[in-house]
Image (cartoon, rainbow, N blue to C red; front, side, top):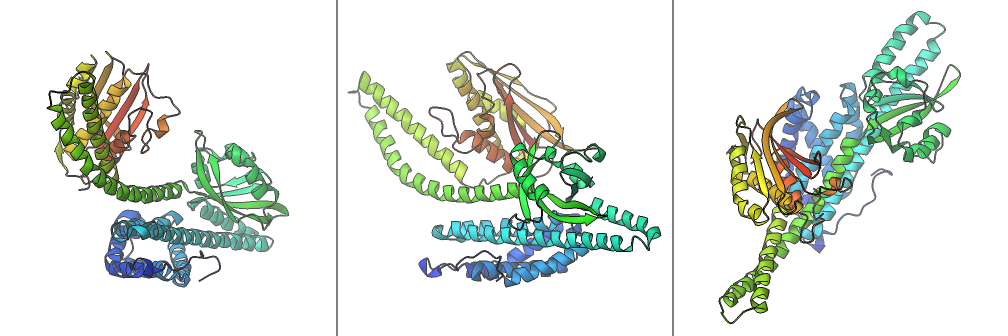
Length: 526
């Protein structure tokens, strides 16, 4: 174990009788095989070009190294593996992102196993061990990869400086090779002279949405940094890059030309060339990594919520059923009249609402299982509108439908799509006033060279305040007096299970527009 490895104690398995090392050994062969297959098929062309047997040996070594970390808190094997795989992948021309994706596959494969087999008392700790192990591995590998990259660049620059007097004729060719190397790396490369930008590579420009590099040369680097991070960047990069108290690698938010601020990682070191002081910086886009970390935390939360929900719903439903049955019996008693009869009806209505809330909790907490088949979206929309016709007429509202007759069938779970449309229609009903209007239309659209069937539900209600729109799909977030905050969360979950997406925007004059897009081609997961 190295000094920079996380300090953790080996879990006391006697508390639960459960052994993590036994679980890892039991699933070793299957996970190694799936890991190898996904590396070969899903990660990148670089991995697809490798020999499957080689990938199998590599994943086996990586799995065994992770085993020592998770079961024994021993980082010796993973450190040795990182050192070797860094050299191999760097020499083979692999971009850093490819190897990071390869490591992330371990988390994707092992977490479902932990959720299914770990005792409740151990689950969060086991997932935390996996996250700590992966974070340590990816961070150490990225740093090692970057240092080797920087070493190559520094050694190359030093040789150029030493030979400049005697090898003037060869200098231009060497400079060309150096420039090509820098321009072709996937990370952004930045050279600063004080605060001003002296050189950038194409990857750096692409990360910032800049088409012409010359536009930013000799301008302030801080103009490409979020305002709240400029003070820290000035201290770390510009004022004193040799300060040993400043981390070698740090994070900040870069600004793109389109106004977006995205998470970024930077490593820098001072350099001297032709008597002038420069700062060499490697800039890395970590947007995907941040999203994966957020998704991992969400998976942990969902696993915990699922366990609690299943337990609570079982405990609540039994007495709820007894209450409902007794209320139905009391409702047949002619002795109730006036306010007593009204109170009884209110109680029965509230019992039904509790049952609906319990079902929404269960739908949200449990993993979605799809039964895909051919689905005509127009038929689904007509069915859902007819189903809710009584609710529309009750408040004298209208639901206008405009369906694209040329709409192709899609492969989907019909019941889940019906649930999506019903939830959106109910949401629209809650948003409009009496005698209001709801509009439903279907169509076909293309995004990123993929074809989607779209379902658009809009209303002429008061609309959603712009500051609330980013939160409406979050679980348990609601502005309704009697809402659970799970309707739209379930919509998003079911649409994403079909490899589709849903978004919301304000109407042109008033109200809100929800649009669901479902892929036309390919099968969804069963």
